[in-house]
Length: 514
Image 1 (cartoon, one colour):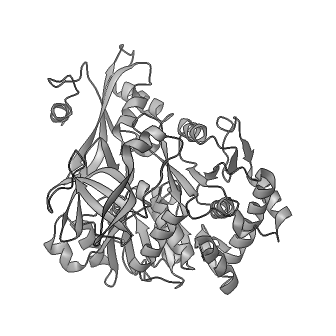
Image 2 (cartoon, one colour; image 1 turned 180 degrees about the horizontal axis):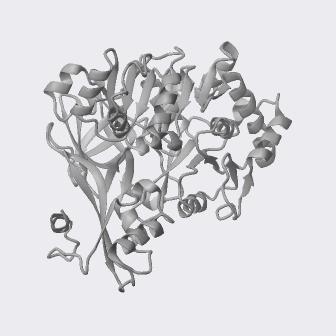
Image 3 (spheres, one colour; image 1 turned 30 degrees about the vertical axis):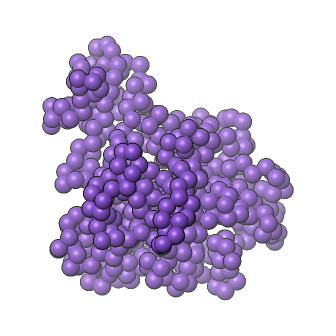
């Protein structure tokens, strides 16, 4: 069976088991199958052989899961867009995708609903589902192994997001490995879903839950902004597998009530998206006496994660920084110099990922694909193998088979688990008519990005106080970028220092603003 058939199989063996729990509402495996089958049948009847990707717009509603499966059952890749994204970002993604259909789980809004695509609203979608209940799409209609299963848009250096294509084969490779990490196989666990579905960390909890016949327990942005409400939901959740960024765990740890009394069923904490600190891991073991902490690493372009490691109590004390793990069996990690030549063990270089998890590239973006992806023949346990490779732009080193992550080589950083191209923010700042130039700098503490500071040069004097200008810039920037990409601080200057080569002197600028 492929992944979709495995998920559908639970509708037969445990039809009443809850597949998704959200704000006191639940969806069963049988409901997921019946409703995704019905919507898929409608999509097949409506679009036939046209397999253009479909946008799914919403947040954490049950219908998100139904739409995802309906898309792939009808042969379409899905593109998740979270409702929290700004209007311009949503427009950019829809325009780039050239989609012909948006499945509107949340209200898209009149500003973005216009274009050469159809919007299937929630009410209309439910009507179509009800009309097609009982119909089943053929297995032949499904997304096939090497076809694109989903496309997640990430920050791009041009100021426009780029769509990472992940095939069914990529996803199945990750899921098979991920279930082994947690020692899960149809055990009916409860997975925490913290990340929005448009962020690839969510793939970890979503598909490990669905493939193991478990429950996905979603929390949303409103809960996260209100710790009292969040902890009330935790108390009734029954979460046994925690999936999040380390930053989210650290936020929870700031409250002494975050402990095993709050989450008595918790067995596994699975982290990805950014660096897990020794201090965070130590605190988790102090609060939870019988848990397993797993650190993992991987970019969106290599399907969520490709390395992982059980970080035990002893490791927290003797190895710093913590390694990000051993590579999965069907992938290889290469550490290369700027010319792409492998370096000696222990030496730092760019992390290159090779193998079954690597994406075929960026959707409708051959230029960016050619820069980052390639086909390469490498040594594979005594024999040569030709595989796809991805140059991550991350720096790291290998030591006794373990990968250590050292940060970004270029201007791409991780902040609170989100991957951000600093040039993306800079280009959007320069779109503002009163800004002449702008530089965005990551402010680090203990080798971790704490927040972003933007330095801006205005092309004219604004008739307002400096703090009012800064607030105005932030509000204008929110028209183009999601909240997590807005710099915490904005410094106004008359000029930006340059190097002898005529490039921005970021190191000097960082010293000057500290």
